[in-house]
Length: 545
Image 1 (cartoon, helix red, strand yellow):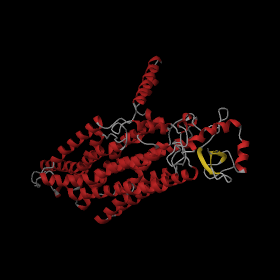
Image 2 (tube, rainbow, N blue to C red):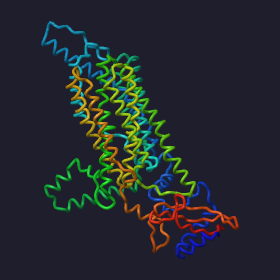
Image 3 (cartoon, rainbow, N blue to C red):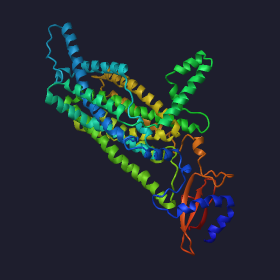
């Protein structure tokens, strides 16, 4: 044993040395796959991961269970976008021309054929009425959020990729759905036939999700959640209810309080981050999706596109988003996270606890790059005077699909595991509201400006993306909600002294005299001034048996 190790051993108390000798037997079999820390130091994420391995493959929750049914759902969703829009446009046009016929019996109009090219409908008045009808339709129906289970199926290190897969399925459906529906309508000769196919796809989705996909929460967690809910209901029943408490109980906006948390472990920076992230998510995913239908109306009005051209436009943009999510995003994640993490593990044989440490700089820069792409594409929309430039602007905007996947993973990194569901529920509620308010803004402005300044919707879109881009500079890296339960699982040197360790690793060294491997436990403490690579102080070494 070298002199440096002897000095460190004597500096530590005897209890620490005894606690480390329990690692000696396991260290003699160290390999690339050997677990270097006990189960108590791995954190709750590893325990859940090990528990899921015990289940059979058809009972094990995974994001891959959702990919096929969600792809079927998005194919139906994408396939019906353009036919539904053109069907609404034809019906509104038919009603408008009928009203004009009553007002002016001498005027003659061509008959409206549903699902066919009707150039007589490409006038500002019909566009205005169609936008108003779509506005009222969105106010009545709204839009529920899907794919939320995928955020509970993986640890934070894989959550960005899993959400990226779900968004890739969404845009895959938007890419191939319009093309398939166009050929299907052409083959059958009936526009209504595609709606029966969509009904069948939705029924298949409900059956698979309801009876085949395994539940992502274990039975124990479900029982604990039900018991907690029952206790809360009992406490509420015992407390004398005033008018204020009754209003708070039935307040539909009460879940939004989790975006401004107070109490132990929180900070003003955390609240600013959560509010800024929620605002970005609303603009990137909610309002931008609401603008899609108006953009199709605009393109058909300005460039005279029909069902085929509009379907091709939607398909190309969605294919670009799929390439960004399935190709570019995994490459960024690999070179920005996977390889650096593997290098740190090789340097100190470290098995880090899978905890939430907030968004890193890579997350923030990916978000800003996506917003920059959205801003440039929206400016191109407003300035384009040809179909080619409009197409190119749409492809630039489609690269902003990286932001929709990245931002939802960033949100989950800010909170402890037991708070993820509450935060995602609050964000989902805001997204549902944006699906109602977004069409109100874009359809209302388009209905008011079509024929005079039709590009006003793109000015609004650039303004919204600009606000989101500025809000991204409020987000700070490595800000998270401290959880007391997770903090108690840090490494301790003995039962009497607790070290505020941030990182733990097991070092394998070689004795300079006997050339025998020596095992040492290294503790990284931010309060210490001596460091050794990424794992710093106090290497306690002894020869391995």
